[in-house]
Length: 426
Picture 1: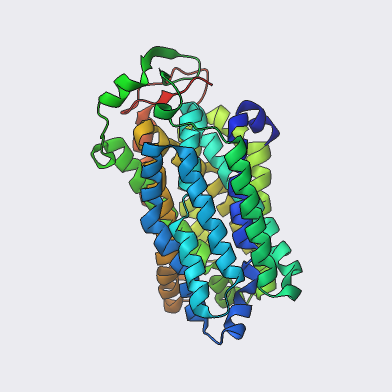
Picture 2: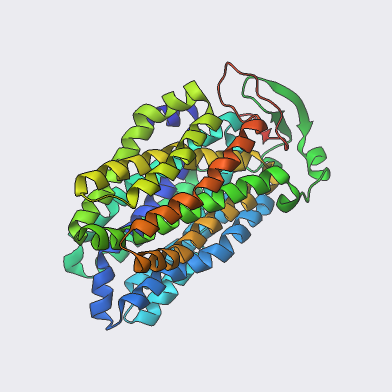
């Protein structure tokens, strides 16, 4: 992270914003059983409570992202963060299940921090470096999820009001930090000179922003074949990951009779593995193989990893498979998002990043449904086989991605993709 900050200091507020946002949410997770007892409700209602946030995020993520393409990244990011503050305050004041739903829905409506943050990366970071920086969002996310539940557990004596107030304070800090330190990055808002380039070291012609604005200003993502292909790939990748993430605890209990404490330990171990891998191995791997081949290895490995998951018989086997799945995600997810960002210019960065966030939310909604059905059919065999089968399609699409010229290695000349990348001089 230190190296990253030195390369792109303008992105530092984003990492703080994403970290605090996820931290604020994750410190509440240990209180889910408390909600069931306190509000005399059922696990199904609590599951619906969590899904409500994802449902509204699914609809409003692309809207906020597209608005940031028009009015600027910073104002929309501040609006999203203000909504998060309101959501956490409502959570602290919740005295019944209805107020809890309102709090989570408000947070979902204003859940634009992820897509807008990724759009800022698309504005500032050269195309060949975007997969690396998109992956750093995953590192930030993982670190927050490792720390948050522990903090929430330590505040359990205060009830839900304790972590909710802390989350509100953290969100207010993020809002203030963003307002003071984050600089606007939308090309049409920050100056006249834009750099049209496909490689950090190979600038081409400099064009006035007003000229760029007049040409194809209303480009449709859905008419961009490269963008559509990459969105299909990411949607399947996110969906399969959503099934695994939302029902893994159920899989562990059914297949190996694991308790909640053991499952929590295994998930934490996965997170730690990803952070270590991304810190010490990932960049070396992508610099040696290039982003397309690195992502292809991860996507292809998912097929085998999920298949093996369905046949684990011992805890030690499960640990090996979980680390393997972590490797797959670390080598493919961030790179795939980076490629999706490169498929469009600055006029659609917010919108396409909003779509990817909506796909993530949709996976959190549909994932538990498919996972529950698969685990009800068998004790895990069908679960692994189906996830493995669904992973074949993103891997097959990766062969098409190889032809797009999205190679990050400096020794290779970048080919021209279907859509130009427009960068600001920084």
